[in-house]
Image (cartoon, rainbow, N blue to C red; front, side, top):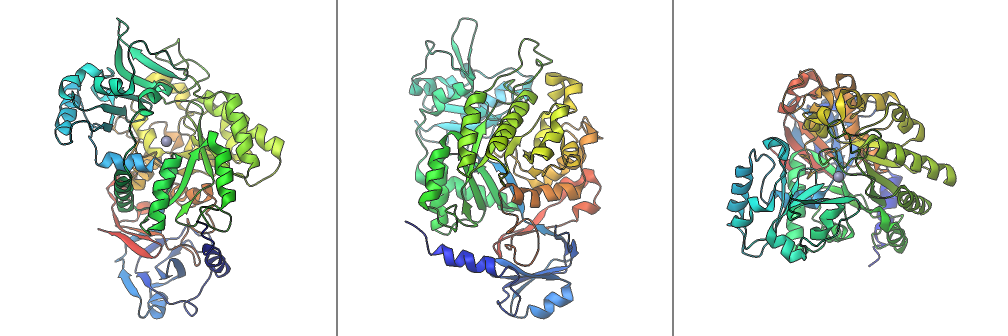
Length: 556
Ligand SMILES: [Zn+2]
């Protein structure tokens, strides 16, 4: 159904961005706060007044109290109020699904890996697929898991559990059988099927080879999907996240759309679909199914973005580098799509006015993608296209200034830096690591940085992300002054990347990312001013209230 009724509403909202209290009834005011607005015109304030789902006024506690009679008043008691966090890269339903599945992220030995799967299998009916897990083989010395670790305890359950980066996964024998995969299976380009010395499948599949099982897995029921979405929204709201930019599928979009129509969203979602389906997205926008003035939906659910891949991940040795891996001189990773294919999809998407965002980890992947973006921009001419590189993880020094020059948005995940930083030096060497998560150099080159988590891959916790970007202290605390410390940035810069940077990355900077009259009333109250804390303590700060569209969706 065409939701044309949204048109006049949207127009009204955008005509009166500075709606004053005299024009609209104030519904909520937060007073007595330390407000970081993100608005260069008024960076600091004490109080914010809200009318409906928009910010009506920003000012002193006295002034806001004076105008807010009849409104609900939240006394912040001197706590820190900032624009709602925008997580620029999530896999939202995967994240939600994992909240209710087996937890392997901190399994520290093969025995624990087996025991946790065995225990979980007892809690779900026979035949149910056990998925997710997010194991990390680095925690037990690097041996890759095998199906014979778990077959004896999962005879009645197909198991498909992935490494925490999502670039490899282990299938047990029941899952391989259900997917019709046996030792006769042929190699897959852009992927790897791991075999033992006798040529038997170990059950471990990497990158494109993961499709052999993933595509045969029965889809989760609508009810399970709805439940995953609800769990995901609740969890990120608790972390102060008010908007997410989701990298997913058309099926995911159906789940979001169902929730949007039922008025169940408490997180705003910009939902990207696979890059190679750009024509379908162009048609969908034109068809107007998602409503909105431009056919791309509304402030709760928007479409218009396309997500692709150049390479794999560092942890799986599938990221594409210019030089070979330091710990494996025969290998320099690989592309999961050809440059020609990526160019033609990007070109098609761009000519349809859609936004392209592509995953690139290794320096060779990033360089190739920057070349493709430059070529398409050159061929199509000036346009506000906002090409993005997701992760932009390892950059050759000469490529760093190209982000600013080409106005390509690096969409990065600081938590990955303090996670990978534990072992990345052994994979790529200390010299190449200097171009790793190069936040500071990218900002110096005037790139517009957007921060996110890559949840389910990493926790969707912006405060931890800010801590990571500011300290670069690896999770094992082996780099107290920071891993590649010259790439540390300030709390203020990290806040910008989690608010305005994210808003800009989704063409939403007129509606969110700052605390300013006319903007959506998406706010987060934190117990301490992150700018006034010793950096190492930032991660101890807690979200105490999250407001989305003028409504409190979480209070501690
Ligand atoms: Zn991702």
